[in-house]
Image (cartoon, rainbow, N blue to C red; front, side, top):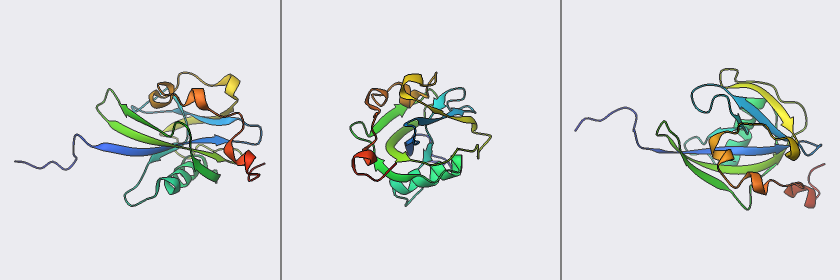
Length: 153
């Protein structure tokens, strides 16, 4: 039996962050590349080995947007998706909500063309498959959880 350097059938774990600003808008990025290129997605990425998913949500958002998010919480009631892409890749994506002050920057121009804040009434299209095919959109909150706890603006 020959071992390959990259397993073919592995399940990857990712995070995605519903980032709100003070105007209650959500941050969306226009993806580039062969994995969802031309679709709009939330900030996020892979959970690294040994990393807590909440820490990954902070790291990935900062790496992609240069925004330091606050109050990352697990997204409830729909906290994850399980997507098998046409490429054969399978991702379990864990969703978080957070708050950010400031304007995003494109920090990974090979992966993201631009970032835009959008209201719930003006969502971008087309959406990245895990988001568009999930119940996430139906459950996006007009009042994010930190507003109830007086943590955010």
